[in-house]
Length: 484
View 1 (cartoon, rainbow, N blue to C red):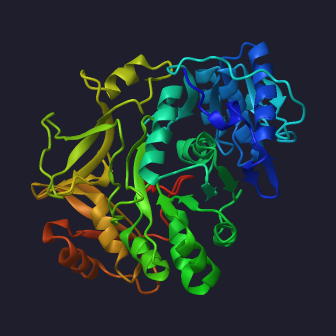
View 2 (view 1 turned 120 degrees about the vertical axis):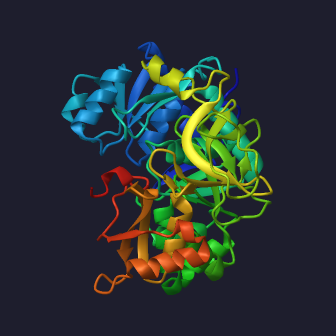
């Protein structure tokens, strides 16, 4: 058994731990607030507690307080629809809900006891953290539910600790670092990496509340050392750099720029590097596994790659027939399977889904497809269900074609899918948001553009123009929502 947050347990200081806009708490106040909340939860015997996960100080205190009590936190997306929220509550059966004072909660939460979170940390003398086994649940985070109702991935304390420690080793992350981000707090990216990560290191977080390039520039120019974001955020940064010299200065001075949750297009990598001299690094993870790979702070930040497996994580690529992909040629595609202490323990109440997610020897089937470069770096090329296209006898990942399309000056956004073709098996379809809707690039022009950069068999055969691509809260393109 070990403490997730030694800086809270050992000698809490007056150093700022969390800041959300003008509001902040020191480590001493956070220890008092989490301790007081944890004591209340322990008195109620709460095993699982829902957290109304707004981007607020109260959400962070609520999760730390739940972990202090030995309870599992179930973060709820405030934008969830009525049906989805009802499913999550029925499935996870939380004992109560934690929320910021004044937050208006939907009817679905009306039957639960509510505790308003005091984030100010007044008072002292609260008991220390409950002794909890490392395998005990820390969080139940619900997947996106693209192929059915969301499933609750049960993340043990062991997975949280090992992932954060592995990232600390890869990124040289210390208590001197100050992280800035504007990510939601109901996903593992914003909550586990973005809030619990700095607290485990004894560092500091500055949450923007709502992402803005002005906020990023302000915080990085006033002492923050690291930035976490998703590709949509870095795209906005790349677009703003020519007109915002303070943003250029901010990124140039940052110690670490990290992108995750989806692939960052190569052209945004290059625009940021050209303007600031700094490279964005990427990492790869998912709800069920937390983090699997990462580019190292002292390594090469190569656009399109997500680094190498983190310490303790085993990773392999597997063909559809179960055979291993051993070639390190940057072309041979396989499904990523992982094994290690970073994995979840189960899908709550879904033994069937849990069993189906693992191989007989304990490897988790991620559903993501990738290639490995000669030096072992991993390049994600898409999801097995939506991004692996079999055309003319080739297995093609949609991601590399999307990157190539985004290098065309007439393309603002791009997504690539496959559709049935009598001759090829599947033909490649490009969904394009043009820079100029009045003069969009045509099929022949884009096909030639891709063929010159990749290979002729990877060129799109069909181009469809859209006003915008459907995206979720983390900026991922929702290909299942594309027009049929």
